[in-house]
Image (tube, rainbow, N blue to C red; front, side, top):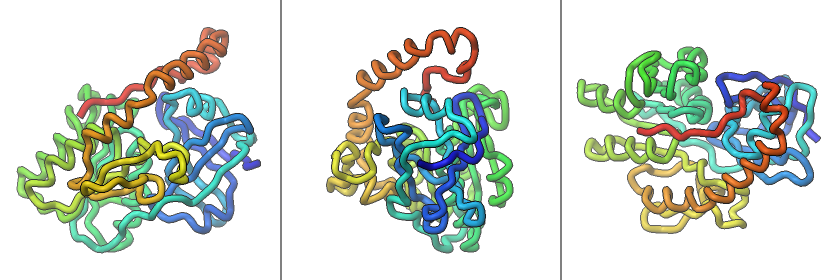
Length: 295
């Protein structure tokens, strides 16, 4: 059993957890993830490690409540326990001195991009961070990104904060204005990452995306995270999760990511039905149906 040390809502449906796990805290690197199981009957869910504290012996994860299990996890509070946390898993992010780098986080993708932004800055890069959300209320980790970046730009779909538009609009604007960018890391919804790849490819800008949205069990055994990269089949959880964006077949990826939508919807509806009274009383008012932003 692993104790939850601290919890905090960063935005509606988006919750930060610090979990006591000294061994993982001491070994994890930017870009890696853990597999969590809430209880003995729970499904395995992969979650990127947003941060760690070796002295405290904790790892930080940031969870967006979209499906049944993530909403169930977001009901837990400090002092509660989770049954399993396994990691660190996956290959670490590619860190070197590229020059000027753009780190792009769409929605909760900002939480996944953040640790890599920290390491890219430590490696001597000029870090430009572009973070986006549907509205001001859903912008996360702006303060943390400011602390590790040379420049930070915020975009919102509705224009309620920062630039009115998408993170991809800001990236295009910077490139069109003549900003020399040597490396791009983009993490977020699949349509966003696809659009980033389309923007940077004509300029030959090295671009990496994280395909964690398609991961399932984190071991490669279930085969649910198969993707096509450079015309070859890869297993995202063991061969990635980060890949060359210009070699990813986003069409196949999109289809695979939607393969279990009906089952996920049924599971979520059952969970909400079972907790109907709690929803009515407002005890879990933060739980709403998830939404993937357009890009």
